[in-house]
Image (cartoon, rainbow, N blue to C red; front, side):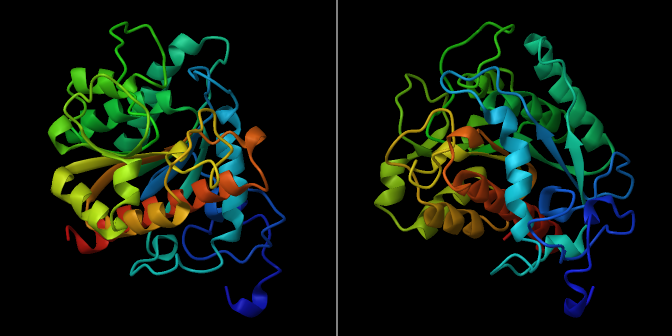
Amino acid sequence: MALEDAGREIDRALDPEADRGLAFENAFAGVTSFLRRRYAKDLAGVDVAVTGIPFDCATTNRPGARFGPRAIREASTLQPFDPPWGWDVDPLSEFTIVDHGDMAFDYARPAEVPARIEAHARAILESGAALLALGGDHSVTGPLLAAHAARHGPLGLIQFDAHPDTWPDDDPARVDHGTFVGKAVKAGVIDPTRSVQIGIRTSCPDTMGIRVIDARTVHLNDPLEIARMVKRVVGTGPVYLSFDIDALDPAFAPGTGTPVWGGLSSAQAGIILRELAGIRLVGMDVVEVAPAYDHAGITAIAAAHVATELLCLWAHYRRFGAG
């Protein structure tokens, strides 16, 4: 669409012909989808499916991340007018990315949700599409990891977070956003020798062998060096990247359930993400956005930008390979 046609485009998310390209729909109007991508349940020929998982029954503090996918979609409507800034690849124009909608589940049966998430993710991956998930609390990442490991083998994990989520928990029936990493390591889903956590600033007795780059280390070092550390750890194997929005300091992301002071700035996180270009990213999520505690939508805006950067990381590897 030519720039002079901007303002006449509306409800692009419902256009069956709108598989690729930038979007010029007014950011404040129309059917809201992530980055104005077409809504699609049929994933034939799709490169990336974006799906929401609005589950927050595993939180230890403030609930509300069930509204995260909706808020992230709304915040993303300002971004697709232009290619992602500073990247050498434009995933919106070069790949078919669709909004697959939210996963359906019975909110009154929370114990059933992890299995439903894994089945939902497996179906998307079996279609040949990659998956970007919008949470939801961080417990949703456990079954997402399991689905990706079933396809790619043990994964390297890059986890941006204030919390390590490796607290002891050997009860398979428990659904907890603070224990999924430990469970994934024990299940062989994550290879701890190829995994790294960034921004940690809460204590946990067991790192499970995962490399921890705490928030203080990030603040005392160049973010370019942090990215180099991460790339050395994960190597060339398949990587899953999970970004808990509370990795950011509450000044940059107040709308989350378990905020912790001393976190990353959005600028630090953005530089680190950009410099991870070349990792073999096979799966990704952004979680723990709770818009009821947000101010001026800044947490949802940050999450929408993180999610877009993840799409760029995925697209960069698809186009250029490792580097």
